Image (cartoon, rainbow, N blue to C red; front, side, top):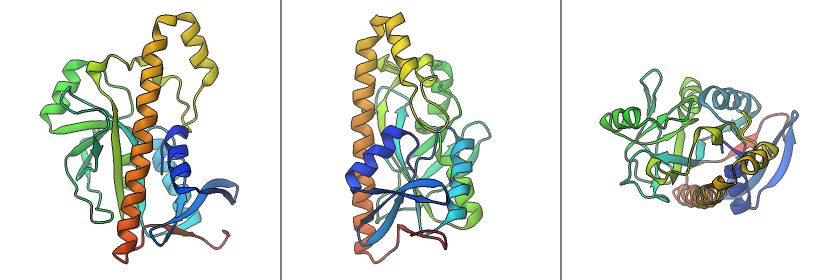
Length: 243
């Protein structure tokens, strides 16, 4: 499950997956590490991702769910491009904790927070660091809650794409993402036309996000290779209505 179009395209490209429609839902199918893989776009935000997970698990029988994509760093010590495979996912709004499992024998480390908003306030970020969080994202707690309820193992593989001290991310950027994870291209153009001084920052943010998404995709497929070599199952097969 990749949250946005950018992240989903990175996985599809690395996997050489092909589109497939099952019960009106478009996913992408490929094979890696000896297992069948289904790639789907999760959407943005924990509640949207949870609904998507419910819908997908209603349609497909899977052995393992992986949330793959980018995350925001919290402090200046976490470099852009770092791979984060969390041991704990915290739903920041409620404090509820979820524990992903390893995929392919990878080492779990650190705590990632799931939020439903872009947090830029240094005071709030400092408080989250004090709680031991190393990065923020917007989907994993929602997916984790669904998977835990259904007894489906799940993992998270994220790559840091930006940090607060970079000065690249601002409130308006989140408005350019639709709930389904697609981008508002017209809105982005309007923003840049109205404030052309944003263009260099916007381009760098897009470049770093793309590089992080592709690294997350590669790390996920490498984990699938390792899982296949261990004899485990990490992919999925269609339900009765699939191909």
